[in-house]
Amino acid sequence: MSTLLAPPEQTGGLQRNLKKRHLLMMSLGGTIGTGLFIGIAEPLYRVGPVGTLFAYLFAGSIMLATMMCLGELSCAFPHSGSFQHYALKLLPHPLWSYTIGWLYWLSWVFSLAADLTAAGFIAHQAFPFLPVHILSLIVLATLTLINLTSARSFGECEYWLSAIKVFAIVLFIGAGGMMIYSLMQHTGWQPTLSGDTAWLPADRWQILICMTIVIYSFQGVELVGNAAGETASPQTILPKVILGIGLRIILFYGLAIGVLALVYPLHQAPNGESPFVWVFSHVGLPGADVLMTLVIFSAAVSAANSAIYASSRLLWSMAGDRFAPASFNKVGRNGVPVRAILITAALALVSMLSRYIPAQRFYLYLISSTGQVGCLAWITIGWCQYRFRQAVNRGQYPRSLLRYTSPLFPWTAWLVIIANTAIVIGTWFSESGELMLLIEISLMLLIIASWFVFRPDLKSEA
Image 1 (cartoon, rainbow, N blue to C red):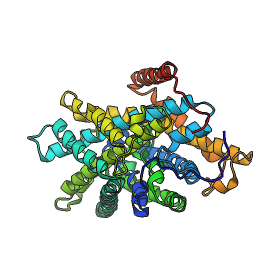
Image 2: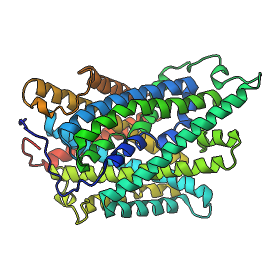
Image 3: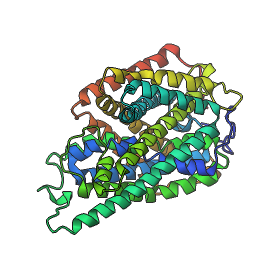
Image 4: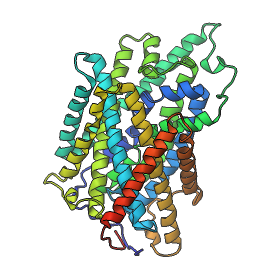
């Protein structure tokens, strides 16, 4: 491990043209997506309103701890490869960086397919004469063109899509408050929380099993680490972004799920309709359910847009670290990794399988699969931050690199590592856990085997 006197400023041809408002809105929009709007129906059904609220607040605390760890690393070493690049710098063997890099890239491809499926499924309600897979293809083509234009085009698109999601959450909380106030006027009204004899499910393990879907709602916020490499003065902006995340969790997740916990019917099986749409349709606001459906569509498109950006930058970084073909490290005249974007979009055509598999089932399977790899990514972030701070304390890195300091070291990093490990293990006991475990182990072994077959000729440092 080498001692660096200053954070590396090389961008490998990528341009630092993302602005402060792009990064701030991306950090906010990254925590609000289809996992909240659509995926929340599953935990509400499985573990009830109290269990769901507990699961989301616990996942939010893990996310906040992860962002603190990532913020410390990104301020010290701003790089578009984010934690994959940090793993190569800080972890004992490059094999872990190689494995998590490819796993995470594939998870973004599947996440992209999930979000495209969700967008196609929602658009199909407005255009029933067009099949889901065709609508997904139209969204994919549009977003690919935006990402090929420039990083700033991606940032502008994500800024406005995130703004729509934020507005929708605020509107939902307000409408839910009106609904609760109206129901309170009826003496016979019982909140959903009081409608069952038990506050939590009899099988407490169900909460842990549902955590993968819940964690998926927050995954994507680590995109800020990738964007830091294409942002001017990330050391100034990132601390401000991280400080605001805790408040956002309380406002946007705590209050929104609190509304659902009071009014949403208990034990209502997921049927493809978002619980948010259900609330709006019962508030009595004309066209509110249609508006919310459009908002959920924008959330799916926003998540797909972020997936293209994150996966292409990750592939660009791995090519620079000689973990992927060198051609993916090439950047076009507009400062974007063209080939990395195109190969990601091509593989995301797996979303066309919604032609043969029901879109709702296909979506849930995809987000459960990507949630597992997301937990591994967060474990890596916590591990890297722990190793980095140890190296600073030993004098291997100068303290001047600590532009932002993650609090409560080493407990914050340990929370990230232990909690995510427990969630991964807990998911194996779910209904489809054995199949997921088999797929994950097989994929991991395949990636590790490819390391020994190709044996990348690496230097000892990134």
